[in-house]
Image (cartoon, rainbow, N blue to C red; front, top):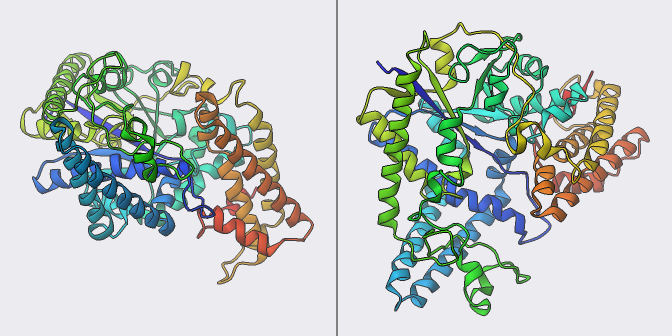
Length: 535
């Protein structure tokens, strides 16, 4: 019997970026990079573990925007064309590096990888990555949880409770359609919590959520077991807190594993390094240099000098680091069991894109970790939050403190001088959405094969509001990357919402324009989103 548990939690999310009006759109690369570097490598790890009968458990959020993009035929087709271009580039690189043995082997490696992933995506998975993750949930290895509809930051959206409710309710309905079951847990966007959110989660039928460490440590009353056991909120929904020590070993820029000298250097890519005329056919058509995913260098050190990447060295380091991570969790559990009347649970949450995208060897690390947990020790076993709650159904009751993860831990990243201008527009639009949804609630009284024009307009207004509420836009504004795009997206969705609001009230809906907007912003296209705003 194990002495304690490890709950590894991966948060997979990308903002909804889909631009059918342009053949090549720079920000769509975020999705293609994540598929190639994170989602397919994770699926390959899961498949190998199942094949070798290694018992593992991972909790993973797949957010509604990400699911919508992964299931979109347009983006699926564009991703295949993206891979075809990478295959062509890697073939060029095999030829170019013929007399550079320290790079030539890497060019061959990338060519093999891109070809393998194209076959896997287009043929073996039939382009359906979401169903592939669903399979691992159906066999009990993976627990997929939901997130808010468009990753809306609830501590701020909660100014209007009905708007916050809609973010959760739309997500739960969408999850149920996709996975043929209701979600048990939710990843609160940015781990943003304020007292009262738990009531919204309870109403939506959710059993648990996650907060950052200080959300539990500063709970009222203070939890007896700190972050090593969940607490029940007064609403009966469980809150799990992040373990700071296990997170630091991976996340820390100074101490974290991904900064090891033998791992692949993320910030050196041939899209930026090679001669412009050579690389031009494989970057943005306007000449903007972009990452290609072909990176020949290892971290080496803190200077600009970088040596060639050695996959064999990196693999050995991933195995060592997995062993070290597990050793530390064993010692941590052995220490905690002296002070607890139950098995401690170490919750280790990360952005999924860390594994593979930012840290190329991340999926390999996970593979080694679960194999070592299965074969090499009996102290720590993997678990999901649902399984822990089933084993320990009685837990202390407390109210988590207002908190978020990220900079300073109290929402500042999403509400500060560079992005606060968006909220007066979002809050006003939220009030108006509740107004028109309630006024025209009879439109949702019964299902009809062809929704009326007003019902279509109401649903599209809800979609535009949801898209404007995404926490990604204030995050980008604060971080200083792609700020014009984030500004444009907020203004665009608010403008579209405002036109729909006015057209509905004036009974002057422009059907041609509505169809155009439905085509462009087609998230939740098969759902009645507006009904969730009815008071």
